[in-house]
Length: 291
Image (cartoon, rainbow, N blue to C red):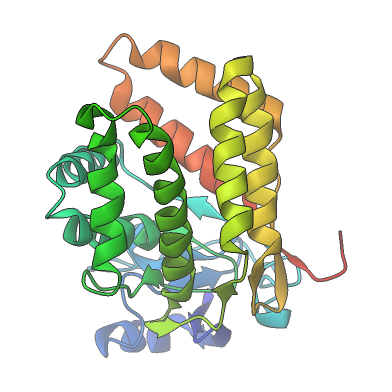
């Protein structure tokens, strides 16, 4: 009979015989979004994703094997591994559309931003951080979120230097928003002890370089890849290094394929999911000093 493990506060609990594990489900200790593992499974999965485990039926019988290691605060692989995402095609598309509309209307920007980020983080799996989420509130930095949205209209003012000033201001607001996002990431409902320490000048510099690099047609993809690495290096407070593994070439060809496919309209939901899942998977956690 299969034995089961489940994750609680970043640690594995178990093994539990099938009957006892069923009792944990009935008691609400093991919830649909709890990460679980049993012999023969390749890795940890949410309980709701395993047929027959939640909502009746017998848990699947699988061949024997050893549980993935959770040492160092992480699952399988000694505490490291790539992030993954399980966005649904129409779920991601619908929320993206609402997010864009909310930003265009300016006033709803803080609320749609928080709503969007909560959806995104709840569908990302982070090694060693079960029930990943976002705890930010609309009024935390409402001025930056609304300012970021409002500046999209700067070009319509008729003032020649307005777009340049708006770009610099937008970059600053984006830096504020980045610090806010990182500070409000959670696991099991608790804020993670991490923070983004990149300077405002550095962030604005990367932002402007990204815009300038679009002149080269393809150079922006490499700038984006290095910018993501800079952001990862400046995210502090973790026992593991956050790394971005994507290359400029990978960013470029996937963006080209995404753009061409979306020109046919119908593939948009699936292409958005494909691109989003790939982009998330390029972020990974690694033991410090291993790179």
